[in-house]
Length: 147
Image (cartoon, rainbow, N blue to C red):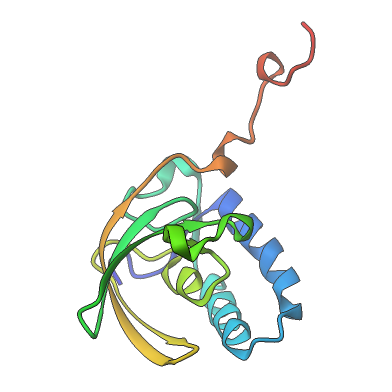
């Protein structure tokens, strides 16, 4: 692990904890196992401000290029559950792959249990676009409130 621990931005951490608490109602055992594993990892995660987030750490809206043990190479975007669409290579942060990647960095190697069994993943590249959660701090000028 590049940084020795998961690194997660504070607002994304709070958001993830909230949606994970709702996911306990999932019936799929692989989802439950992935959520449980990430929940355990979050207990020791380094939660930081947006300004202190390393650019190569996977977070919401990140584009991540991975290589599997079977030499399959793919690029996905990690998104909120409502925007997940595998046909467009957008993976929900609550999908087993999204849960596996979140908080890890470029160069990390991960072993995770997926619906088809355990898999090894190498993170080749991480690219960021501005997260929608980072736009939640509006001042009066942008709130639509008359001045």
